[in-house]
Length: 278
Image 1 (cartoon, helix red, strand yellow):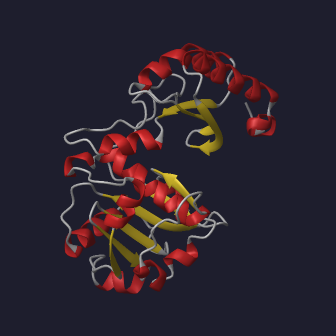
Image 2: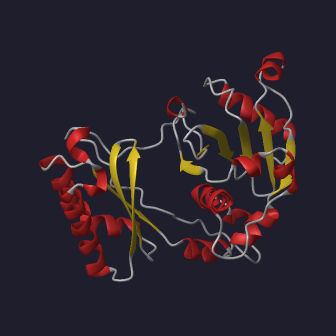
């Protein structure tokens, strides 16, 4: 289907397909909620289903046949992603020795003749990318659950990431861990002089941030992979768009660097390719 006839979720055929997928899910999970967004990797309409279940693969089973009909037979660029409620993940993070699943390993992003899209092993993605209100790249964000809380280690990580991309002029770069966060402001001449390895411009505690979204004690083993990513995603989203509850934690160091001011109205994107941050 050409871009001239697609028109995203305004297309009547897309709207009908969305309604079909929502109906299939609500037959088994009547309390499920849905958000619709447009994406470009691959390009199309994304249906995000929030379902309170520990097994999102069962949610995928409800829609997979219909989804394949829509994508393969009807050539509609529509994709389905089941996720768990943020509040449920926060509760489970408080339990010791508990790993947490956020979304299905079989997210419904199919390309004809290919398996579901997965993040490649090479470092061609940032964990999060932030774009300003004009859709210009604002920051790359790397999230490390087990990184040593040392600025020199974070500097090496940043160097390894930037050596694979031409993103040196993106205004900010962040490394976030369960205990500390590091921020760099873009300075291509200084980076060139130091072979990309330079200490961060700001260092701040992330403990209050995590406590804001997951109150109470959380075991160190609880902060694993996508769960930690989800919490920091929510924090950055709230910084950009405001929060319905208590205002999100705003470390003073982020104000001093101009990062917080730049975040107003920004967009936070999960796992954006370096080649697409332009």
